[in-house]
Amino acid sequence: MLKTCMLLGVACVLLQVAADDDFGPGVWKVQFIEKCDQHHHKFIFDIKQKKINRTHDGFYGDLKLDETFDDTFGIRVDICKHVDGGCKQYQVLSDDCFINFVNKYAEENAKVALTFAGVYPPEFPIQSNDYEIKDYVFDYSELPSDSWYGYFCAKAFVLKGSEEVGCVEVHVEFMKIEEDEDE
Ligand SMILES: *[C@@H]1O[C@H](CO)[C@@H](O)[C@H](O)[C@H]1NC(C)=O
Image (cartoon, rainbow, N blue to C red; front, top):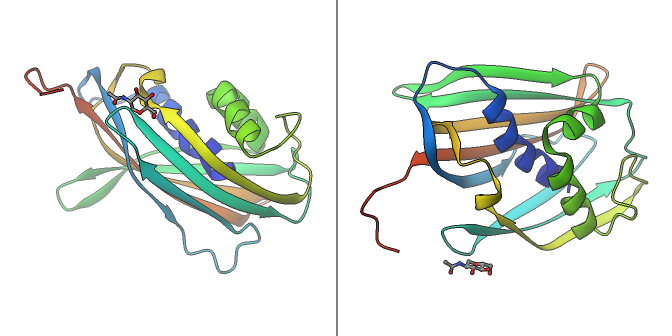
């Protein structure tokens, strides 16, 4: 569930990132989501993406929270852009408070994701429990239609103090619209 919040936050975050790359209209695509190496992480979560069609993807996942997720958790998002020869650091965003970060970048999306995970009310703090996300269908057309073109990788870390307690890696592409593409 947290991963989903992050995933949706990432697209929004990319919009806040100033860059000298081409900017314009296009379409979003989440290429894939990966677990980070998390054997030492406290929060073990899993998420799967199921491609539906060009404009929609479904997300499934679960999260075991063994303590209340409140404003003592922070977040750091490392964003790199795929270029020839690797992934070049693009931007690092962080906030001592995960909740503030989500509210700043992806409040509405987070509410929907929390609702799908059975969190009621769909707000932070989140009580400790086992949560499962089922059939969360995300419509990419809800994302802004103008952004910077490129293929980005965002690693989002959940932090407790300076310790990384959870992580997810999201690969997102923003592409120009092909004029003559078949529907
Ligand atoms: C894509 O899938 C969504 C969700 O099932 C559906 O609402 C939408 O109409 C579909 N779009 C196309 C172009 O098939």
